[in-house]
Length: 330
Image (cartoon, rainbow, N blue to C red; front, side, top):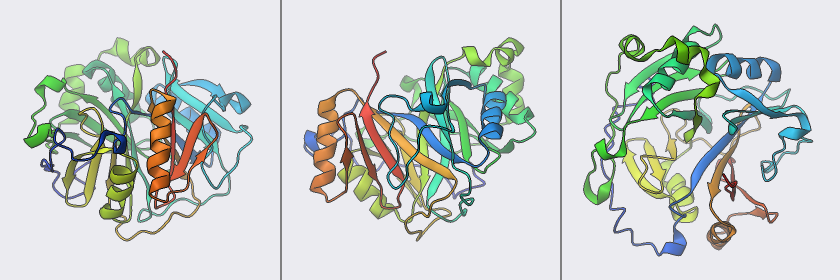
């Protein structure tokens, strides 16, 4: 989700019926799919690594050639030796892959690409601790906060202009659902100072790296929503979770959204040029059979796919790279 500064009123109403989805099961992505670490092209690897370590409490999980995690894909149209790459996360779980790609320009605000990477925390204490350290960091830009009914969220921009959402979900049993069990969302005022006063624990602030965190969802800028729906729903197989003016939210398993696409800044945008920013969005599935089903759907719709037996690589209509891979055993 995003802030009121970035888009029109966010009263997301139900749009259809998940339970009565007319698509056969083979045309839908497995309900056990999830999003994984997001890859960013960065111009200053050292500074960006320091930022995410100091502001968000992420730790280095791998770097250099070791950062080429088994099964982690290269995006189409580019190559890397694995040098100049850092995998960051918490408690062994990757959140971001920073790939040093010097010489690329900054993306335009109006082009397709990343709107934000949303990092999900388990509880208010861990969220508030991370929000405080991010707000205190001299290279953070605080964007805003919002109560989305299903979640509490705070927004920042990193030193190279990439959007960040820090959020926690309210318990699913408290979510309000409309027709077809669609989750209702909104953007209501959330006082950041009051939130921090209520939930900051200094012990949590000093122990950020001990708290769990993961990518909860990824929000993209695209050129038009009809094309986005054709790719992410009709082809890749996500379910529509919600629609609103200028935005589409998709998910599996009844979640409020694993991916979102909006045109608030990027309406009419064509395929992306090579820039800093988004390198790859990774989606994990439980089994190789789930990957095979995705490959079949993509190829049936004429989408180019690279399948090396371990991962499946493709791009959306705006040259946003999408990787599907089997989920690593716990």
